[in-house]
Structure formats: C-alpha cells, structure tokens
Length: 175
Image 1 (cartoon, one colour):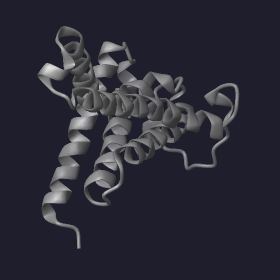
Image 2 (spheres, rainbow, N blue to C red):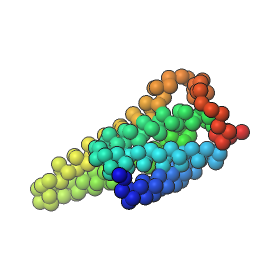
Image 3 (tube, rainbow, N blue to C red):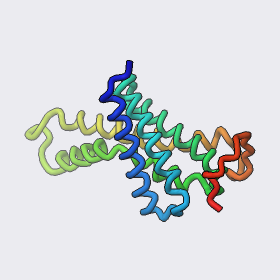
Image 4 (cartoon, helix red, strand yellow):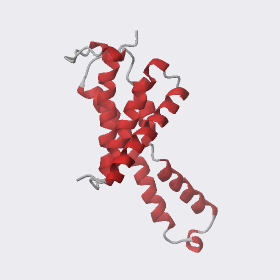
C-alpha cells in the first residue's frame, strides 16, 4: 500500500519539476509549441528520481541516472513526434536535477579552506569538502551519461530517421 503523503508529494514533485523545466525552457528559447514536452519530461524525470530516493531508498547517483535516462530516451521518442531536436527539451528537463546544494557546499568549503588556517577552523572541513566535490562531479557525470544513453540506443544521425510503430497521436503534432 502506497502512503497518501507519498502520492501527494510525488504529484507535487511532478508539478514543480515541470514548472522548473518550463522556466529553463523559456530561458533557453525553447519554442512555445514544445514547452509542454519539456514540462512533461522534467516532471517525469524528477519524480522518478524522487520516488527512487524516497520510496525505494536508492542511492542519489543511481536515482539521478534513472531519471535522466528516462528523460533521454523519452526525449528521443518525443523529438520524432514533434519534429524538433531532442536537446531543445531534454536540457531544460535535466536542469531540474542539477546538484546545486552539493556544488554550493563544495565551493563554500573551498572558500573556507582558502581563507583561513584549516587546523584552526575545522579539522573535518577538508574531508567534508572533498565528499561534496565527489558527489557534485558524480551527479554531473550522471546527468550527461543519462541524457546520451537515449541517443546511443537510437543510434541514427537525426531523430527524424527513427521509425516508430506508435499510434498516430495527433496532439503531438506541432504543425
């Protein structure tokens, strides 16, 4: 049985992930006709990450990889349907999972170490900063790997060359 608060939290996560993806899509000049794809992918990818972290107890890097692989694969499939390069909506969708807090703590640790004597301030500062740095780099690599897996699975020159045997969904047409 799934707890109610997990369902509401996941729906809220989908909504917030979609809104953030739309915001970044607008910032990156994503065409208005395909902003809904960025919102859908951003919400879906971030909610998969959230569910794996909260419900399944998966490690952060693995959960982020699952979310970005979902965004990458679905981005290739949607690119064929909306006749747009996948990077137009996969990049805004993945920005929802950038490790901002870990990068902030990494930079703050580096600044503290550079500004004062390490032994006087906090002896564990170097190890904490190194830990945040490794997490930040791991998550950034995970984002790039997850996005490119979709392109590697459907190894074609462009998304237009991919032949899909899907029903004709007219709401995906942009023209």
